[in-house]
Amino acid sequence: MTGPSRRRRSTQRAGAVLDRPMTSLHLVLVTGALLLLIGLVMVASASMVDSYLTLGSTYGVFKKQLMWVAIGVPVFWLGVRLPPRAYHAVAYPALLASVVALTVVLVPGLGVLVGGSRRWIDLGPVQIQPSEPAKLAFVLWGAALLVRKERMLGEWRHLLVPLVPVVAVLCGLVMLEPDLGTTLCFVVGLFGLLWTVGAPLRLFGTMGAGAVLAVLLLIVVSPYRADRLTGFLDPFAHASDEGYQAVQGLYSLASGGWFGVGLGQSRQKWGPLPNAHTDYIFAILGEELGLVGCLIVLALFATLAYTGMRIARRSVDPFCQLVAGASTVWLSGQAVINMGYVTGLLPVTGIPLPLISFGGTSLVVTLFVLGMLASFARHEPAAIAHLTARRASRTARWLGLPAPSPYVPRAPSPPPLRSPRPRPAPRQPGRAAGPPRQARSAGATVPVRSGPRPVRSVGPTAPNAPGGSGRLAPTGTYGTNRKARRP
Image (cartoon, rainbow, N blue to C red; front, side):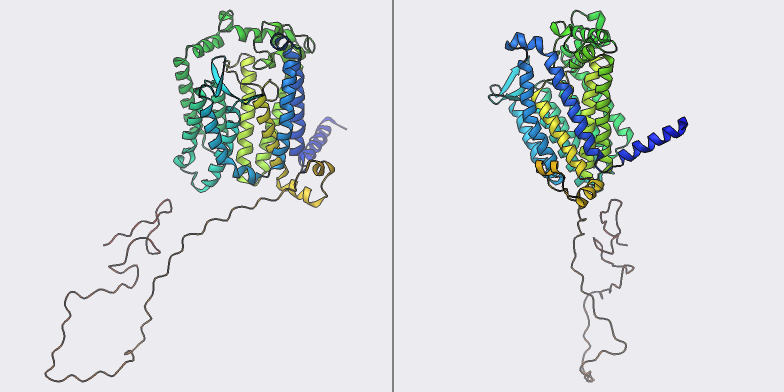
């Protein structure tokens, strides 16, 4: 077999696998499970030193992460089980609850102050970060809003209002904590919604310029953000202060080589690299697993991004298309930003690496998003036909997953009904039937009608044709009725 024919056969086999009805669901499950497993291993390795110094146990932080995984797995199952209409129904209440939670976290005594930022709410045994579920709530609400305004999205004011004002309010509340990284995630989610809905590219250019100006303003207002920018531009010139963390992260990546120094053998996690198990866990991964390990993680995130866009493309429900596309852009953008600042390509923002970095609320929300994508994958037309034609699998019965129902588009709202105008009876030829006319006497006077004689209207060309709305009024540009002009 020649080389071209062999490649052609391999391409056909790959295409046949991708054309299977349940491929999207399997890709979500496998990719998410592998990333979660790698994250658990790396959290256990990267947090050993810090866990022993702060908790007195080498695996104290790892046990906390296991607890959050135990919470996140049922949440993932709930996300798979919920149908798309349930996500649509909770979109508006979820956004309202998120605004309330983001306001509550700013109240002293209710919000926990850690490292100069008030981002968490203490619920006894656990602390939650309201900004993480708020990102998902914004995506759900934005998708529901755009679907409702589908026929008016050709005008920029219907496309951006109230979408942009709401995200501005959310970003303002998050910046009061302060948390620049989560603010960037909201902006990425907004761009994901607009890109999925098909906004013109010039709009992205305008909004991107506005976002850059806003970030520069925030940098000018807060000196420590200006220091971060200075450390990003030339980290080795500021290796002892602003660029210290960036330089140590680059040292970690450089020490790994092709295959790494071995799992658990990192030297940088012993103190030189701050936040080794949170923001800079990708640097520890590169040091212990090498370039090969970094490429594997990068390939998994690329597969997850492809899967999310595949689900958005194959769905027939507009709400599923928007949510899947925006969620994929949000998670992929978060991963790109994290790996970008670890490798020195972007300024340090503190955004965690999804499913890899240590973090409770972020992990649970990400698992719920993966469950939601899996639910949308089960509601693809080909998947519905496949699951309906065969008996439910043992796994589906054990997990209690309901049979997916096909998407039923909403019927367009009928135009308002108008009561028909009464029309006069048609005139009969000749003299109308009636009592015979009495002969007028010679001295009788003829009555004279006072005032002008009214003109009878016979149609739209009559000189006094009625104006206003109705069938006789011309239709305006945007479907609004304009009053007819009187001559």
